[in-house]
Amino acid sequence: MRENTGHRAMAGAIARMPDPTGYREVAALETDLAAAFGARRAVAVSSGTAAITTALAACGVGADDEVLVPAVTVVMTVVAAGARPVFVETTADGRSMDLADLAAKTGPDTKAVVAVHLAGRTDGIHDLVAYTRTAGLRLIEDACQAQGTTTGGRHAGTIGDIGCFSLKDGKIISCGEGGYLLTDDDALADRAAAHRTHWQTSAPGTPAGSRLGVNHRLAEPLAALARHHLAHFPEALALRRRQAAALHHAVDDTPGVVPLAAAGGETPNGYSALWRLTLPGPREFSARLARLGVPNSTGTHHLTAAHLHPACSGYATGDLPRAQATVDTLLAVPFTAHDSERDIEQRALTIRQEAASWSS
Image 1 (spheres, rainbow, N blue to C red):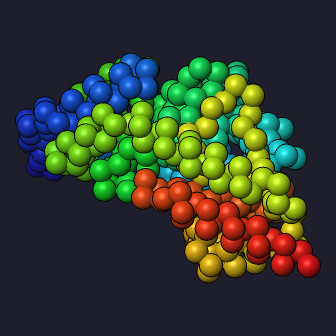
Image 2: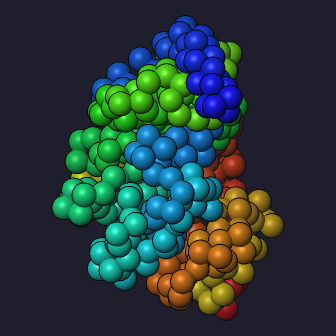
Image 3: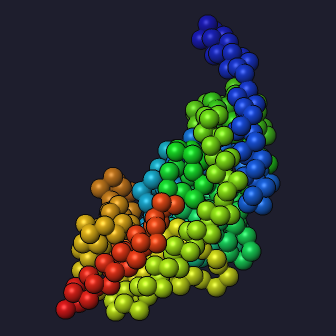
């Protein structure tokens, strides 16, 4: 009896804690983000990874649930709020999740699909929308690298049920560290806002203090900095696109380095220039470029298919050869606002020279 009384007292104390969502800069940033990307609601959080775990919590995903994720992804996406990630094979062209494998791996414990827009590309997202609606699953977009990419006239991160973004340094909108979610679903937004602040606010069917949440709040000074960068987003987006176009123009005719054109109806944000390597030993080639000052996802950041990552060994359920080949042959060269025309010219020269000597 004493134990029950203590639980009720604790729940009451949590419910009476102040509402932190009244922070002015955070609230203003959320209003500005929703307007900028054409979403009904935005919820600011402390990081891009926090955005993904908060989105999963808002969608009711938790322990013992399964979440389908592409095997071609960054490992941070696999952090799935206590749920079990199930890796999905890549299509033959290496550009999106294979729908047949996705359907085969959908089971009674599956609650959501996470689409990952690596390098700012959204390939296959509209097919995933159709599939998840039919299957009764939530579709979460990891759009951390896709700020400003549009497909079919809509912004990446506003196509599924909820989109996740990062505000870390290097993103087109940044504030050092932070993130945000976009959604047109008020219930999802309310649950995300409650989860990010220890459930001190209410959400549909879940009064304040009725659940345990986390501290994923974005600090006020970081929100103010993000608002400043958001005001200059059109110029920053245009710069990234010019940088990507310049590097592609200088490299695209290089033998063994095949450009990956945007899908129909898509306008990429220029986060990375993208090629498929047909050279022998593509991972070694990418590592060579990294040593020579050309940053890239495989050579610099050691991107690998998720099921082969040591930290994900407990989730691997079999070989996914197309995913492995996709990652091994991908050359994704990212940009920052500080990259000059001279920097891009030098990277282009290095790629051309190294490809020529590598082939010979």
